[in-house]
Amino acid sequence: MKQALIVIDAQQELIDGREKDNPVRNKDALLNNINLVIEKALALGIELIFIRDLDVAEGKGDGFEVHSDIKVPPSAKIFDKRAANAFFGTPLLNELKENEIKHIIIMGCKTEHCIDTAVRTGTVNGLDVTLVGDGHSTTDSDVLTAEQIVNHHNKILHGHYNVDHFSVVRTAQEELFQPIHDNYR
Image (cartoon, rainbow, N blue to C red; front, side, top):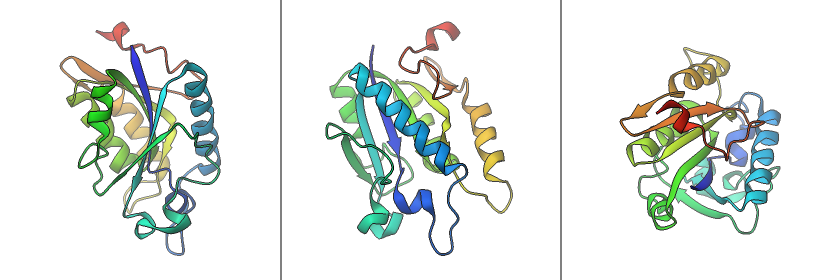
């Protein structure tokens, strides 16, 4: 089965915060886990795609770029988006279809926005999705802490399905590129 690792909005300003915004929860662990999974993907020849949000740092400068602590390989593809949905208005879905990718692994920011949307959109578009439970993050909202948001999404997105395709949540330490979706069908 062909697979791709998709790292969403892991951008400098979003992860580190700025004057009025805090950094994401467990930012160092997030960065380490993203790099760990990138290493695994590269060792297996898995396609790597980064998605950047044009709203971050007004779409320019160092703040807009993928975080400087993330080891972006030269072979990685980078797509920019204007919406919370990484599939909307980007070449992402065509890229996955053209390369016959059936399983995507998702990491990045922010949990309740772009990560949640990508997981659900992936299943609707005929993909099995693995969300790296310790590979996404966010900041506190007015209602919930970042920890509560991450824990909630890990719970509700594990087993989320759209008839034939669904998502599971696993940790960065697991063998993410050995999909376990068939164990649940």
